[in-house]
Each structure stands twice: as C-alpha cells, then as structure tokens.
Image (cartoon, rainbow, N blue to C red):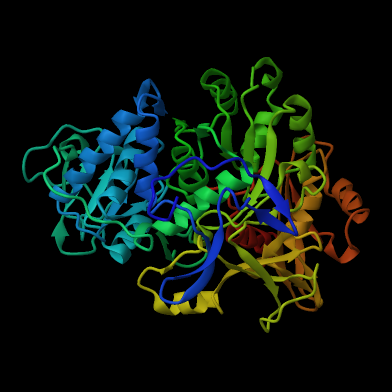
Length: 568
C-alpha cells in the first residue's frame, strides 16, 4: 500500500539487529521525508494517510467484532464507527471548524473514545484533560488553547471557567437542559458564558461533508504534566500517531486483533497511544476500567481474555504480589508493556515463573515523542532490566554532552531524539519550540547512555541529577539499585543543598517489612554502587512516594520534604 491507502494488517516482524528495531522490506520500507516545515526524518513509506483512515479500515474489516467493552456495554466496530460519524457531524453543526479545539474531560468510558475520535474525524484538535486536574489547571489550559467546545460529565463540569472561549459544554450524564442554561463553573477567563447540553444532542444525521485530513494536521493537543512551572501544549499530528502505532505493531510482531485492557487514563499519552490507538489499529477490542484495582485487573484479564496491556510498574507489582494470582486463568495475556518507572527484577522473575507466556516489555518515550521511541525485546528483559530497549526503526537517538558533542559509546549525556513520531511544536510558544530542538533532534531533558549493543539506558532527568562534590549521582540509578532489594516497595532519591559538596543525597523508602531499615539498605547498596552514590540521608517509613496520576514521582514535593527534614 502507499501512504494514501487504507490500513492493512502488518505482517509479523519483531526483528532487531545492529542496535535497533528493523522491519522486513517485504513488510514496509523506510525513506527520508520532510515534516513540519523542514525537519528531515525517516518514515515508513507504506502507511495510512491519517489517523481516521485506520479507524475506518478497521471498521470495514471487522464490522461485527467487538470494538469497546465499557461495563455492561459492548459496542461493535460497526456501531462505534457509526457513533463516531454521527458525533463528528454533530460537532461541525455545533460550530467546530477544521483546526478548532475540543476539550474532553472524562474518565475511561465509551464516550471519551467517541468524543476524541469524532473530533479527529471532524478535523478538530482534541484536548484530553485528566480528571484529577483542578479548576486552576483547567482554566490555564482553556485560556492557553482556547477550545470552542467541551465534553465532560457533571462531576467535572464545575472545573471549567465560567467565562472562556468555550461556547457550549456537552455532558455525558445529563438530560438536555432548558435553552440558555448556564453551566456551573469557577474562575474567569474570556468573555463568553458557557452553556450545557446533553452529549446525546451531538448525534446527528450527516448533513455536510467532512474535511480532508492531511498527515501533518494537528489532531491532539496534550499538555505536559507540569511538575515544574506551567504545562506546555504538545502538538501531536496524524503522522505522529500513525508512526507510534506502526512502531508498536512491527516491534511486537502484532498481526492479529488484540483484546486490550485500558486502566491507565485514556487522557494520558500512554493510554491513548500505546493502548487505545494500537488496539484500534489492530482492529481489536478495548476493555475499559475506570479505576485500578489489582484483583479486578486479574479478574478482567481472565473474563475478557485480555491479550495486551500497558501498565505502570507499580500496577504490575501489585498484580504480581496479589495472593490470588495463581487462581486466575491468565493464559491469553501475552504482552505486558510497562514504562515510566523502575521495574524491580524480582517482579520480572516472579511473573516469568507464574506467567511464562507473558512477554514483559519495557518501553520509553514522552508526550513529545508520541509515547515511544524505544522498545525492549522481550527476550532481553530479564538480562538487562535497567535498559529501556532499542531505538525504533524510524527513530534516531544521540547522546550529547553540555556542548552538544556526541559522547563515546556507553558514556552519559542528554538524550536527543529525532523521528516522525516526534511532535510538531509547542502550542503558541515559538521560543519553547526553538529551544527544544537541536539540529532537528528534540532535547529530551533525560540523561542516558547507549551501550555497544544499542541498548538505551535512562539514568536521570537533567534537572534531577545530583552533583555531589563534583561526582555525578543519577537518582534513577540509585533508585534502581534500591528496588533490587526484595524488601523495598517504592523509593525516590533527591538532592539537598550542602555548603561544602554542593549537594548530598536523600533517599525516601517505602518498605515492605519492618526489618528494612536505613542501615540494612545502606549495607545493601555499598556492595552494589560507588560509595559516593550511597544516600547520605534516609527516611524509611510507610509514607507512599508521591506520584501524579500518570505514575511520575513528584520530585519537587520530595525535595521540599527533604529540605524540611534537614532543617532547611
């Protein structure tokens, strides 16, 4: 097929050589392409013309198969596609023009999928908002992105500012209100009062043509988690998501419809990209869970015959340690993708023993790389648990020093990433966009290394690296060493100011048992890492490590706690 053809299933691949993933030439080929006004990258020659083409092709191929399972609701591909089509026309009738923004604040439910995919089909730009965002967060994003419409539920409608660019909100759990009813809200921003209607009123008989979608059209605006400073709006395009999907399908050798479990938020890039988009492209079934519960995950995998999942390591640990794990029939569970945090080797070993058919696969990426740029071959997971895998076929990764010079193989430096899945720009922020790129490569802000075999290691965030008397201490390295102790449930390492050395290290540890103490862990680390990397200060107690809803540690909060503990 060509770039304009409908999507077809890729043939099995899953091959790697010379330090990267490769796709058989009989499956697809790669060629240089120029994107986003002058950025030259390597891209797949044979690919869907746009994201919506994948959805239409899957619906045409498997119309009677299940597409979404949401509680008691089971929706076929035919019905899902019809709902998307109807709501797309409804959005256009409501005033959504090509390139306009639609805010979607919902948890994992069918209406989220329909709303976002209808927005894409209508030529709009979807803005997924996590349901844990507060009114100030939502107000900032709305003011910055200026969506014209919003889709949400009663529980979160009040988090939108009463005065803004949004002219109407559609609630998935409300009857159609009387004309002119003003939605409840807080804050202020623009000059237009927002009104509310039922989401059902968006469904309409097609009355106009849909816009032509191009590969470089923005389709999603995702705001970074904003753990420091204001979040930036990452502009992700059709071609970004198409390549993320193809990279996953090829690297994992997926050539059949998957039954996937979506329990991480669909509003997060890891939920929308590697779970929902990959499943949709495979013509498979997405089973939705609104809240994570380890036993419910195991029960759902058995009941729904789940084959594919993406979970944060903490979720996988809870499943692996659940006492009822051996009682469930999990034979269908084949792909266990994880990322974003450390996976303790004992957990990998436990799952390998209990579920030998489950492929444990680490993956690394960011919102700016449309979720992924490396994937670990499953057969290397146990031997190289600290690695995030090999670069994907169309992605190039460099490791550079502070002067942007490439470092020798195995040396540490900032990871720079280039590829067709790398975002187009930051929304309304030319200065941030310019600062984020170096010769066509995105500056990840992650410190890492690439070994002689091509395996990539992420050692720290640039801002989280600790300078202890001139020695570099990578917090992620120390955290990984701590997690190798069977008695450690979770941990975090931060730097605290020191008048002589510049910084010292402070470790927070959540133990599994009372016999895990600072002295025990200090001795454990002394046999494994350099003496200057062993934490100077410790807090070992049952207090959970603070994380946001996407599993990221809240290091700013931890630094404040460490400073307070040291009397700062």
